[in-house]
Amino acid sequence: MAETYIAKSTAIAARMLGGEMMIMSAVDSTFFTLNEVATVIWQAADGHTPLSKIVERNICEEFEIEPDVAQRDAEEFVNELSQHGILKVSDHPIADSRTGAQ
Amino acid sequence: MDWKMATSRPMEYCPVHEVAVEIGGMPILVRTDDAEFRALLERRYAGFLGASANNPPALDVDIIRPDRQICEEEELEVWSEGGLWRLERGDFQAEWDPEAGRGRLAQDFSPYAIDCVLRIVHSLIQARAGGFLLHSASAIRNGKAFLFSGVSGAGKTTIASVIPKDAVLLTDEISYVRRDGEGFRACGTPFAGELARLGENACAPITRLFFLAKGPENRIDPIETPDALRMLLRNILFFADDPELVKMVFRSACDFLARVPAFRLTFYPDSRVWDLIQ
Image (cartoon, rainbow over all chains, first blue to last red; front, side):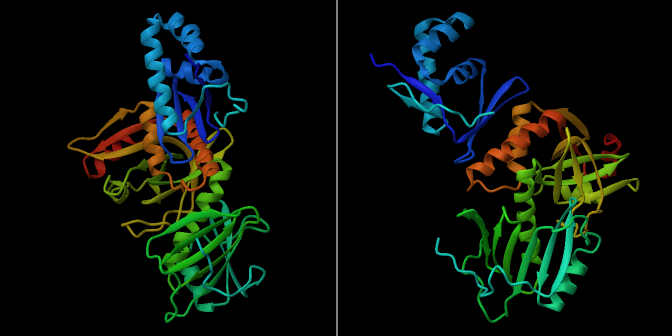
């Protein structure tokens, strides 16, 4: 099965505020608030680490979630954010994964 | 968009009359050849005249005869193109160079066009400076500034209309929020709403942001930060056309909420609400 790689878009602004990660699309001003698990995925989206590895290392172990459930939820989250241009998604490592966040 | 200014005057042309309109400590030199328009500016912005800085940003205004159409678009449109901001509405056309701090405006003989353009130019200037213009009433009491934000009908005019004598009204419509070191200050503006009353040209550190809601009793409730950020962004004057500007405004809004606590203020529309605002 092909791996999925994710990287933060440069066309966003993001900030951890009051313990929550808030993200705004600079393209259409769509606004997102991430929960704790989604924040971990977001912070690990470096373009080089496969999503499955992020789920295994950062989600399953830290939050004690079953791998199948965690992987499915992570893919849904990634799909939603990619549809809004917040996350870049590829089946290859993403070379330029600089972020406009923070 | 095919863009052609309604004025034939070049950017380098320097009109003979000038009036420095200073809002939020930020002067803009409004220049015109029309002596009557100069007099109109001096009346409209009385209390906000004078420049505290050398070589302030300048806006050259060309008054267009009533028999000439300025712009086909009735609704306000704002967009950036090639480093310039372009603005147009039925009664004006303008362009603003944020790097040079220079702009041109072609408008009819009225205060409404210049008022709208000044709001937009100030919002562009403040976006770069870490501040913003906010749809809110604001006031100073006991040396502290309070913002009362909300959409049209939320109660900005109402709360401003029952302000006590020991408070200073900064505006009933558009608040001017400036970055000041680690904090933020609210400054008075001449941008009036339904109250049709110019704010006082005063400034103070902001200590509370209230989102207004009318109700049967007066009460203050905390707001979760994400909700506050969402509401704050909804009420900041900015233009989503430019991604860099969106990022700047987002950062400014986050910085603001990291320093200024936000609450929901539900109030019965009479002066007793001010008992809660000290």
